[in-house]
Amino acid sequence: MNWFLQVAYCQPRPTRYLEGNQLAARRFLKGWVAVRALGRRWGVRIKRSLRTWPVSAYLLLLAIATAVPVTACAAFLAYHFVAESSQLTRAEYEDRLRLMRNAADLRIANIIDDLQVLALSPSLSQQRFAEFREHAVQAVNLIGGVAIVLYDPAGQQIVNTRLELDAPLPKRVAFEVEHRAIETGLPQVSGLQRAVVDGQFIVTIAVPVRIGGEIRYALNIGLSTKYLSSMMDEYVSAGMVGSIVDANGLLLARRPLLDGDDLVGHPTIPEVMARLGQPSAWWVKAVSRTGVPTYTSLLRSTRSGWLINLAVPRDVIDGPLHRTAEWLVGLTVFTFILGLALARLLSHRFLAEFSQLERYVAGLRSGAPEPKLGTISEVNAMKKVLHQVGSELAGALKQQKALLDEINHRVKNTLGTVQSIARLSRASSSDLDEYAAAFEGRLLALSQAYNLLTENNWVGVSLEAVVKRTLAPYAGPDRLDIKGPDILLPPKLTLAISAALQELSTNAAKYGAFSVPSGKLQISWTLDETGLVRLCWAEREGPLVRKPTRRGFGTKMITGMFAGEAGWSVNLEFNPAGLRCVMQFWSRDEMCEDRSLMEAS
Image: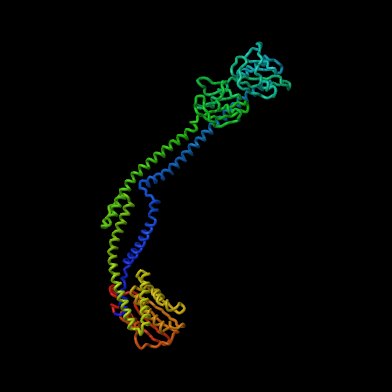
């Protein structure tokens, strides 16, 4: 048995699945060793830093994470709508207070206009006081006042519609308003006063009377506080409190009545009293006389100087917000409890499925039975995958045993091949150095061929790669001319062509083109439609070639290898210009997988 017989006989079968499992097994073992080493080094730290949570905790967190955004969004929308409604309610009450203040100013302005028209009466300028009194009685009845009184600058009454013309008229003691009207020449409005005749609470409006361009008198009208109270009935609705306060903080009018009393003449509440000098105050927190918390708003009348007050219960403004907040808190608590209950219910379902999965995985040691599917599709998918993987693993273990047997067989064949190479190299060598060089080169060729096949997972090697890898130690690219189509050689043919090229390269290095710096080599190949490859080795510009007198190991190996196959051939031409070798072979293995190339010959 020659060298190539041994090489070809020991080649592995091109079984891609077995080689893939072998590579995966090696990677798994390397990864497992690395994980074990990392676990021993960092095991303590990992145990301290990582905490495991049950499924129920994750489901609870999921429920909370889902409920919180929904609750927050609902809270935002509810607060937005309620706050907008509260703002509209505030605006409505502010407008109501402004209307009440404007109504009071308008009434006072109308009364002042009526008094100023009455002050222009000719009977008054001609001092026909009886006739003027008749006009004044008509005017006071039309206005709805208590009385109209004419005063001289000293405060003496000249005409009083409540007293007869010949009745004695008293002198007014509280004469400040009338005195200011005479001094300033402008209409004046008083605060709370008592009438001279009967002492009832009134407010007075005084205007100056000019005769001949000179202020001679002051004409005033007394208005009952009930007159002011009736004005507020239109603007103070149920639940609100309205009042008119003079500059001294005394109530001129109040709605509603408190136990039937209008509280006229009483001081106003402290919160309003503290803001008497201000032109306005909005939404002041106060407490009504009945103990109800209110928001009080104030506006000062520019005509009279009175303070117009409107109070609203705080519950009307803040109640919707508070009730909404309470509703949201209750909704949040309910959502949390519901999420907790659902998480507990679902966690029991998950734990039952996971326990069944754990028992199934533990049972894979004794085989891969058909799994019992549950109610969770993902767990069912995991069971199916584990069943498939377990079945494949069982098959892989069987293949692993067969692979180990195959490796054992190949190791024996490889050792036999090395033994044949050593024996045949000795027979073709003349001295020890030549033997060592030949033996080492042939082992290197065998190793390089194995490396190429290993890099390609034993599925085949490109012919160009075989040529370049074999010739690389002997010559650089500037001395080589390599060309030909891309051809994938099967494993056994790869080893054969690699061995032949190694023998030709060794011969060229000793005696041919590679033995001198000027020598060059051209390798080309063609492929016809039948799959037949024609490879040509042509040396040139080397030393003069002489035909050898005897056949060496390389010549015997190449000719013997190509002579035993149908359609294969080799032709060695020892031309003086350079060795020329033409090899012809099939690009694919046409023989049974159980027979090597040399066994077929």
